[in-house]
Image (cartoon, rainbow, N blue to C red; front, side, top):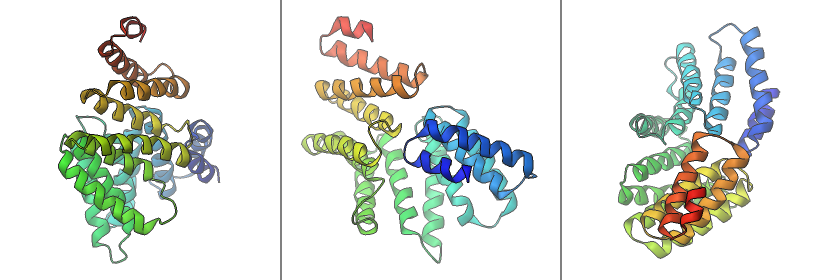
Length: 272
């Protein structure tokens, strides 16, 4: 029950409430279950995702442990391992050093789900979105935009009223449009991303930090400095509140200093 409640908190952006429940559940399962065990693998993955959201590098390692344990127990069940692959891919996508592995994992999930006799279209769309983000970060905006549009069409069919990934889809569309030169469409999608993220996740969800920072970085490169600075100011506030003194906070401050310097705000840049 603790694990279920913890995952519910985590999925709604309440990482601080999720943390004690998920950690306690993992500790109990370590004590009571002999490894390898599927429930222990579940707890490892959940704590791994928590750590990833909090910005700790150990998150991907915990997900790897969960993945290896599940493979040991059900070696021929690719569908059962697909969720581990998917979570691991998301934990690896931001880093240049591990983005290639993330792409491979997303492609594997896509292949497994498409070949399944009871194809899960939602998982296909999720994996397609992950690949689009890989392509964006690898500076392949044309391919990313085409894949984002396909994913958005799939999600429209799946979630006619509400889609929890709508902010991420709109973010990918914004960045892709900005990068290929569709500046007006991109800037509109930037505003839509923030609006949707606030509605879907709440104003303090950790995902907002990633979304706002990445959009601000692209806007900075395109010379849209005032909008970039506004997003970075919001990112800085969120980072200080949610993760405090952390490398990601320093990255946000550094990027904001560069934008402020470009705007001629030398004193503010020095403070940042």
